[in-house]
Amino acid sequence: DIQMTQSPSSLSASVGDRVTITCRASQSVSSYLIWYQQKPGKAPKLLIYAASSLQSGVPSRFSGSGSGTDFTLTISSLQPEDFATYYCQQSYSTPTWTFGQGTKVEIK
Amino acid sequence: EEQLVESGGGLVQPGGSLRLSCAASGFTFSSYWMYWVRQAPGKGLVWVSRINGDESSTSYADSVKGRFTISRDSAKNTLFLQMNSLRAEDTAVYYCARVAVTGEGAFDIWGQGTMVTVSS
Image (cartoon, rainbow over all chains, first blue to last red; front, side, top):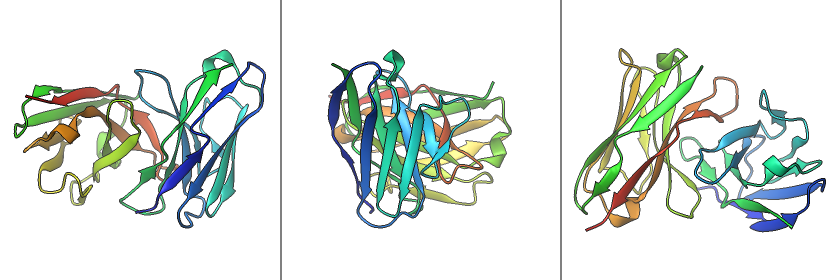
């Protein structure tokens, strides 16, 4: 199975900060990389697909980049509603799609 | 509104069975691959099983193979997960999720989740 490793596991940031989360795959996943946001007690919400395509309705302060094994999710100006846990997922290796362990973004 | 609503979770003893349901509305259910994804308490997301639109193709994670069965009833717009021989390690919130048609394997619609607790 392809292993997905996110860093950091958690971070503290302030409203207005630029935040970057990294996701590394154990082998190339091309651009088959997706990002989700999950708030406590809620289902994940799709943010980014195909590494850099913004899902409809998602604010433009979210962006994704990368290909192959290294990817980043960037929040350009952190807002109060962005405090959550973020997961990456690869969809290259069908059917065994795997997720990263998550990155929790907390209020500083 | 496109929506998925799970039901059927609960407390079950080790070795027991449960059947989860996921009712779809607001979209053409039979056109989509559907997945079950679970999340153990305080842990990350793990895919469990998947099924294509006409039920001709199914897959399972190694951890549930031989114990869980995925199915769907397109007439009733409902996805199912039959879980047998349950173990403590199956304790999790179970989500059904739709694979986006254009999204390179992204799950664009998720249910609210249903909790399964396996304990004596």
